[in-house]
Length: 89
Image (cartoon, rainbow, N blue to C red; front, side):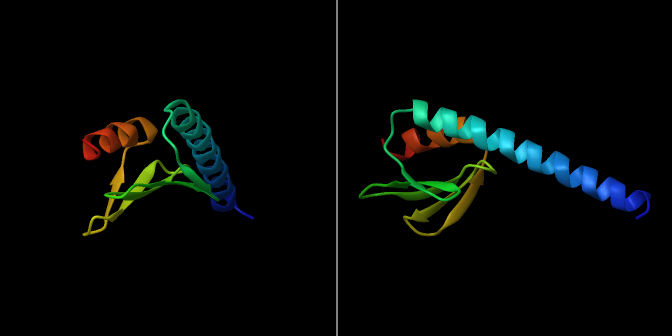
């Protein structure tokens, strides 16, 4: 293929490496937090009586499912844990 094909493949590899690093770091941070999560495929689920949240480890985003309205946040595991502690107070 031409030069653009090479550029596209290189960008794809860079993106995969970046997401793999995010995933590794996010897993370490969440495991060290001491908070109980349910592990599902590419996410960590947090469930309590007043809050339901899914954290996506490869992107660092999380989605609040309950209470409504549903909302998506970004920031990584550290920001997620800080946000989670503020919600549970």
